[in-house]
Image (cartoon, rainbow, N blue to C red; front, top):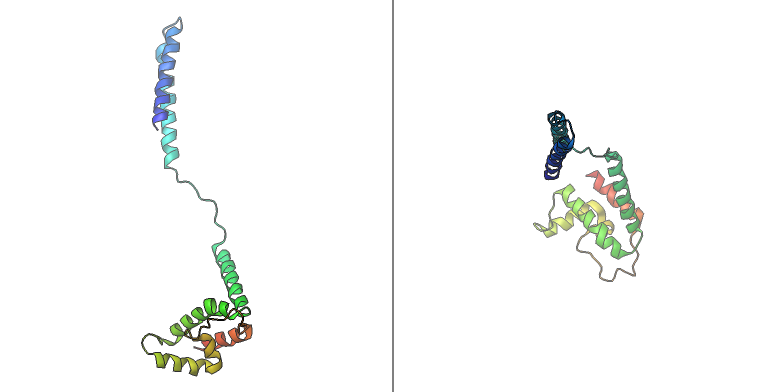
Length: 161
């Protein structure tokens, strides 16, 4: 804004100097008036331009983008079911245990025995071993994960709740 005002003042002063250099002095008020009008229009344009909100580019379909991200995350999680037990323990087991707690209302912190009994009753001993958050293997790098079929059976049991 300061630059525009300085440019406007220079425009008015320059117009007056040019008009004063002319042999006919009757043009001085007219040229000064034109210079002031131009300066005011320039300042007004600057102020209006500042107040107009900058339009954001049209957003891509947010629902489609959200669906693509969800699909990508799901594919990654499913692929971890077929990899090593360490991947299962780090990524799938905490998610499944959290979903189990939310679905049943059982909290491991409150009632440890009730938590494990509910897990064994819902999943069975074989599947509960893959959901139980305390059954993490320290040497799981060489052990294979349970696979997609086990993950599918666990998710089906959670879905029943």
